[in-house]
Image (tube, rainbow, N blue to C red; front, side, top):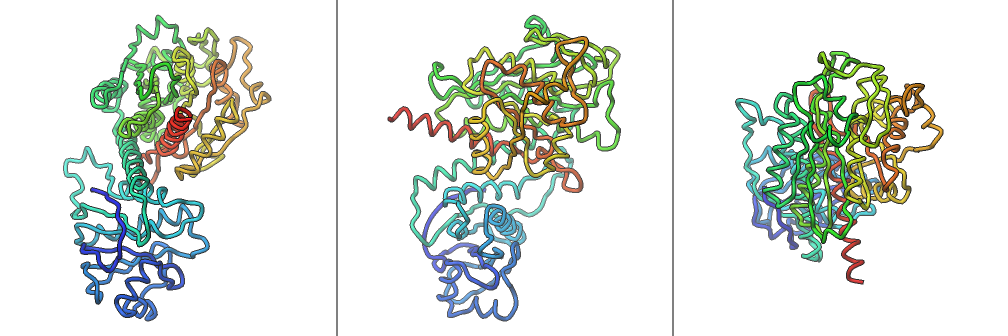
Length: 503
């Protein structure tokens, strides 16, 4: 699907379908008013006959509208005008594309980006129209012998407005939306792949391929390399598996290497049985999604490399399986991390923090500006925040505020949880420097307290995406989150750096 931006009159569009909005109750958007006036009240007459009220997500397809040059006009319900915000806009766009795919339209011109959305500029609407459109065509069927063969005629989409549109701003917004959507699609593909295919070795090969495609630098540490570095915590998780662990680094240098990089650390447990602390069998297949933190790093780097952002970003991906083999780590074992701190493993199913802590120590060598780790870390985060917001914890309030701002702008919600020293007490061990769990209470926070012990040398934030990285049930699949949040964070940083250099 190709996208472009333009401005003009909806009545003069020679395309397969023109899309305009209708608010409740039967209130026409500006573009719809133009069409209605041009057709001598044809549209308002249909609405007044009760064919459509403007309920959010509803659609009405019209043919042969008088005095228009397009084949069809699609009316899309926008709901109540006073409540038309981010979610409502995305819902309207989603309904638009779902209906367009049911038609024979090969191209369409959408007059939705001019519809007022509270606190949003037209650039936001352009970007998120593209993201929703790309989401609507994504299918997790890459391994089916007969892939979904739904007739897909829609090839070209023009985002248009009846007012003035700055072409430079519009093109940048379009580029951001496409790059983010491509990054999300990669993250989805990786999350949806079965664990017999998406292994640590598979992810390592992907990093090498991305390095060639985008002119990045990739490096893969094998188990022997990690052993030399003293990564006893990461390697302890891999002991029960026949699949060798990998530590993957993927470096994007958009500026001089003198500029400190943003480091993204993604949890890459390609399948998590829980180890000796075995998980219950129901829904265990979904533990292939335990590498969605790693997937989001691959996706974000894809997005920023496509946009060629002037900033430095390093992805670090510790990746392994967590299996209950004969050599698997046992509850009660004590391991030594790369930092030299010892860890008593009381639950082998709290393995994500064990691989992340060594990766966080490894991140020090890049002398980072900031470090953000992303992980499907705790079920407790799902209990606390459900499937709406990712959990956010940080040792730096300013960094947390930046990430919250990025999440709000990207419409990829996160919620700031406390990281207080009182919670740290729950990690005490009689036999080691710390235990790897702190009990049931405040599980998301104590997991973050554990990670914070390995981040003393830099500004750090943690995103717990256990509730947001995938969807269960009939529509099971990876969501691609938090690629939009991370891409927005990096983009904002790049813009800020550019402004600082100019001044």
